[in-house]
Length: 168
Picture (cartoon, rainbow, N blue to C red):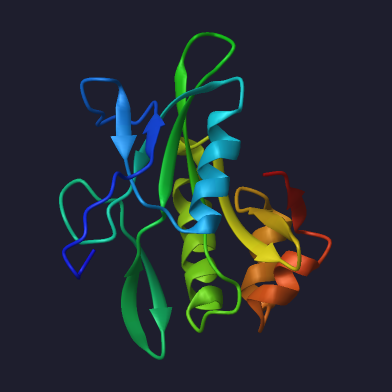
């Protein structure tokens, strides 16, 4: 802590960069923690990567526009899954608050990225907490991307018929 107190961080399995016990230390916020655990409980889960929030060679950055300025969103997670044929696929899953000022611009950037590069992923999803539950947007779906492009509110997209319940 900033006051100098030390404590053990929670540790999670299957991260690409793990310690000698096969675990990765991270202090997630409540949403990230729930999304990570939900994804790790998927039968096909092989590994995951915590995408760094900083600009670096090891960070996936996706551009978006806000207030006439080009910015970069760094989706929180990349998950790796095993397909039926044994091949490994990757998924982008980004939990982000729909109420934040950058929520809709980031969704638009992710939607554009999914349109242009979606063939390289099994899933590209945005997740937000709505009320007591979570909702997910499948950005590989054209109807979802169309709704994002024409919307003026991130919350309304998650609450609409293009959003689905995300089980944590």
